Amino acid sequence: MIQQASTFLGKSQLSRSVAGCTVALTSYAGNSSFEEWHSHQNASISFLLNGTHEEDLFGKKHKRLPGDIKFIPAGEMHRCNNYTSDARKINIDLSDALLKEMDISADEIMNLLQHSSQVKFTLLKFYHELHDPANHITASIQLTLYELLHPAKTQASGSKQRPQWTSRLQQILHDEWNQPSELNDLAARLGIHPVTISRYFPLYFSSTLSNYIRHIKVDKALAMIKITTLNLTEIAYQCGFADQAHFTRTFKEVTGYLPKNFRRI
Figure 1 (cartoon, rainbow, N blue to C red):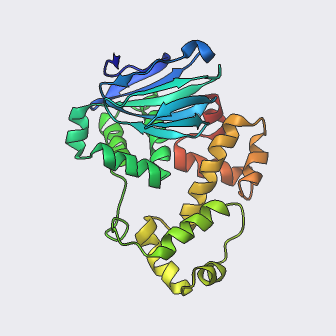
Figure 2: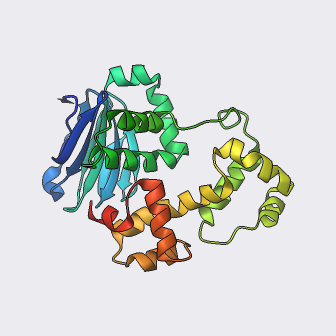
């Protein structure tokens, strides 16, 4: 069957529409929310906040965990099942008119989600702005939506011919995110000069090295806040922050939420 635009299976707790999209916080009541094969009239992005579930999508079976983000093109058949009773998602419904206005295709959105954790953080900021009672500035919300679908790029970062060392460096940073990184050591492992990393990292990653590592740590913290009972101080230390104050400040800057408030949504 075809789900009508701006609707999601599950129970919508909060929902707001702006600029051709609808953003909703949706909860699922355990296995009673079993879905049959279906598709949606509009494309959508979903970010799993709490709980887990299974999903059949793009010919594969997926185990969805807190922190997972996905894009489903309009008309794409899929189904989810085995929701845990605490499962909640931020769902964003994107109209065809909005995608045309933003001049972005389904393939480009898919590529964004696969290669940039920044999309996840911008989505959280977007959701926060939409549901912040103090925020009545539509233009600000629209700018955040534009940032979500058109993150900052540089000429080099958009190049199809990125040097091989960039992929290897990205893998090292994500695999060893909780270990100290020395520039000379990284350069030696990559077989390049330290100046090369210093000069070209901002071009190929659209970020400074320190900011990129901070984003990785915050990404790890997102899941830990939701799936563990550790207090925030323990999470801060496990994610490599010097103290809880530094963790709280960085988390708020990246996601728009204080860690304690993110744990509640």
